[in-house]
Image (cartoon, rainbow, N blue to C red; front, side):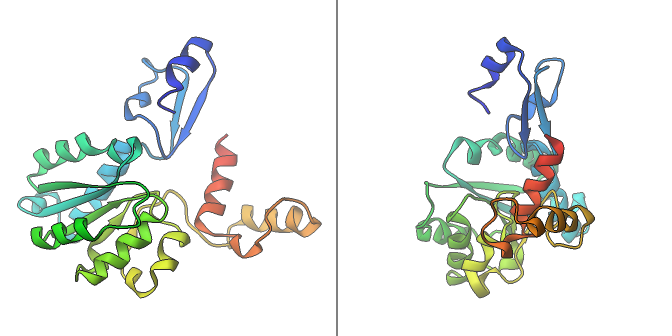
Length: 221
């Protein structure tokens, strides 16, 4: 999305970014052909900080708290660094931001650093294998899962099932609920999969986090 912005502006072709992309593209006066939908980096970060504040009893209770952001070592992972710094200054919480190099299947050093810092919360801004590894390594180093808050790309079944018991108590932000009870999901099951259409081989995926996100994306697009 970052690399395409200049090109789509020159070509006057709409670009839809869902749950990712540059925060400043929210200003349509400057970026008339970019349409960020659902979350952007700032709204996601603000939502997570507000959630932590709600657990502590209000935004004023964030002052003096220690929050660590464990982020994927990529442009995606780094895009909230200045946003967390801004909110740290605004609300007075101590902040450490620790990078995990891609793919994230080794995090012992990072979690030993976290254990030394003894934070009140860890925000997991992960991707792929980094997420279950983070939860399992947190358990090994004694950090409680119920004080780890995942971002929107750390919230799926693939992120928690491989972590097993280490994921119990873990919370992550999302833009849509999972489950099959929604009319649109039931209609797809009946009219698409029921007629032998579609390319979803594993029907157990119906109603999963990413399956439902795909439905939402299809509606928005």
